[in-house]
Image (cartoon, rainbow, N blue to C red; front, side, top):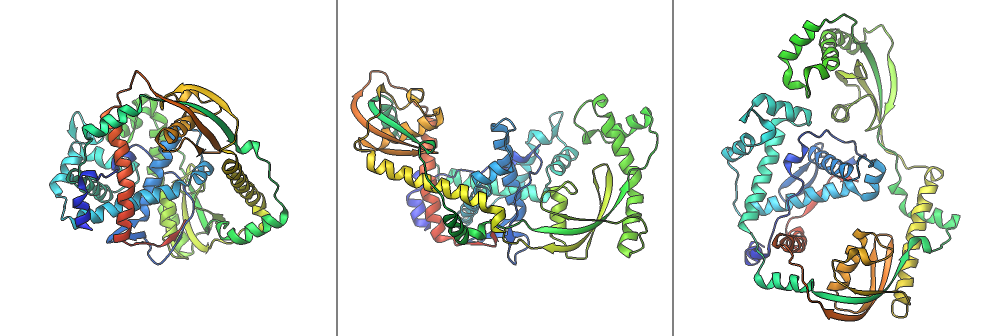
Length: 477
């Protein structure tokens, strides 16, 4: 395998997964339940490299934040599930683990000095242009990571970067000429956009039941946790401005913003500090069975209003009957006892019938659309375009610019003059009527060509590596 890679190293590239720095300033995002095997902290093993649960959470969180920003905050867990975001996060980590195996087989290592240099030169950890240990620990704490975890991430990034440099590829003059020549080509097309909305299908109750019988393992309740807990409210006391200012001067690095803007936050933190001892005493009484005030009961899932995701991970890792020390939640401290873990159960058919029916209808529409495309693409009558280039994504009626980009990219790179292209929820039939070489070409940037080349080669590399490094998973998504 090493010989194969060295022989092909000029075509080899590493596409790094979301940078270890991407987490800075971003909190964790909730995500769905998984069923785990016997490995408590590892969710998979690829070759000799283990993938940790915390890594999957962080990668998912980074992806979620990326898409949330892309959609202007209009992104939720349901959309994430529909996009298969959990699977994407795992595949990114699996890809990284495969590359780490290669790097280790090549004998590449990371020195402590290299990790230190990365950290010292990271601007997020600096104050007044110099590294600040306090700022470093503050940023990591706010991001839900320990220095050890972060430095482990950095070590992986450095190792993969070394592999990337070792197997560096370039764009040859011939490749650049081929890509740039492609931009001079112009096609006159006849095309027809078939949409899911134009297809009518029927779904019977018997078909829905049959589909559910085949796929019911997909429809399970989330793992739940029955708990009992006590509450310790914040003490009531007057806090003057001088106390607030004194507290701020001592803990200034904990706050983002000007003093006047964070005064209320500081006031709450002073009350928290003043209440901690009381909360700890009540926790000990609760644990000993000596607590005399009200004890609450609840059943919570992975995402709830009582505990943060970080605290939920502690609860998930606890044994039934154990206690969690006081944590601040909703303007009070809560101390929790784990009473029972309720395993995921199959959803009742009645509860998921509408979902199964919608998925079955979608599948039948997709199948019917493909049947129409296969039978009509040679004889269809559609819209005729003028001469267009591969970049003319605004000249295809009925498609968004993104979908038109996919469609034209396929048409201009396929060796056939008649066919169909599936683009999201559409299928586009096309026929090339005429071709010509235009006068003007667009000079594609070398970096763009390199990215395309890297993506194609990386996909083939990963397929090759999966043969050499077995992937063992301990979870079901």
